[in-house]
Length: 284
Image 1 (cartoon, one colour):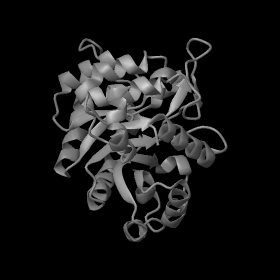
Image 2 (cartoon, one colour; image 1 turned 120 degrees about the vertical axis):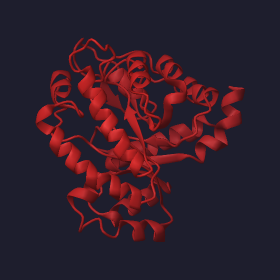
Image 3 (cartoon, rainbow, N blue to C red; image 1 turned 60 degrees about the vertical axis):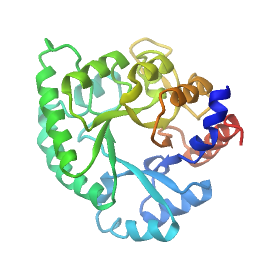
Image 4 (cartoon, rainbow, N blue to C red; image 1 turned 135 degrees about the vertical axis):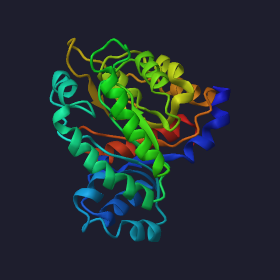
């Protein structure tokens, strides 16, 4: 606990909120909700800037006036179906041939938007990443990830793959084989539980220096094998948060802690209670 207390103030100064958890329709709505939460840092959903440019054209000015900092960005792959584990394996990320061209076309716009916002990091679910070079889709995923990584590098961006859809060891093996210097990990401990892909703390220790971004989200493992786990409000699930933050201190995590809530009908209040939980845990 001493190590945790030594890093508590630094961690608190790096708290942020994921914009898509708040589901804002336009920049002023995002600012209002962040103000209500008492947070001035956000991980930004970049898709609305591409999908609804008119509604989001004032974003930079509105955020600057409110003193809100965008710490990183997120984008989604086209056509993802999260209704089941099987459907996300089939439709998720960069692998499906039927959506690859659309994904690549969208990325041309997204990286420019991220660059204009002055971002250093963008993250996404790349899809289920094979770690075995003998897997028939291995080379396809390597080629597409390399293409996206180099597009990001050309715009001064680090690309972070979110955890959960494979074990930490599989993700590390894939990244080692990919060997692109601007590809890293956005670590989400809850996703490790939702996908039932190993203990989050052990996973964090395995990925170590690959981790450059993270989500604060909580969950319980699936009750029925082969199904989703349950996302729950931060502090109400099975993530060992004292161990999580202690491990973050041990690996000298340099990034921001972005609170995410993707389920439930009271996301704003759930995020508020989650922020309170983290502040209490860290002694403030």
